[in-house]
Image (cartoon, rainbow, N blue to C red; front, side, top):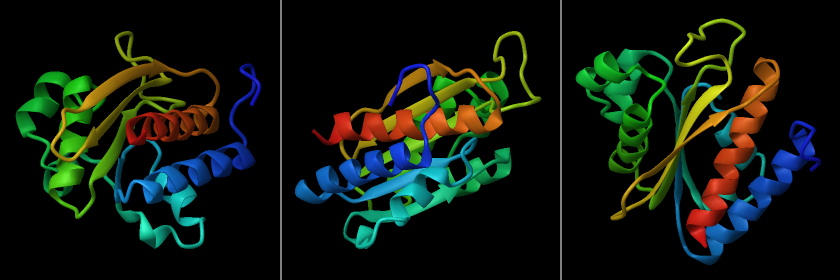
Length: 168
């Protein structure tokens, strides 16, 4: 994939295949917790035949209420830091593991646009968190360019690349 180009469907499928192989080799089950991607990571995973051997579940949680009910994000976290923050994505990824049978998880939350950005969190700001059961979460902020589709594609790719690194 060219660094100047946004990930294509083929790029994302190839990444998902690599993630699946790595997880299956290590006998890890995956859970996803998605806000700005709306289940796109889970879709890329479930497009792969046999993914049930390494994919447990995916949760698309957009509202504050869903983040709290499905993923255990604390109301105080959302009020103090907002949905697009290190604190929220860390609680999302931890909650995905608590509320699933998975051994590894990824969570994403961000501002995909075209509206919703602020000076502190402009469109393209995305937090991604990864965690293995029993380990500490890792979270990273990204500032992606392009339109809504491009931001979401780049988020899916970065989430999958992080899973590859964590599964290694």
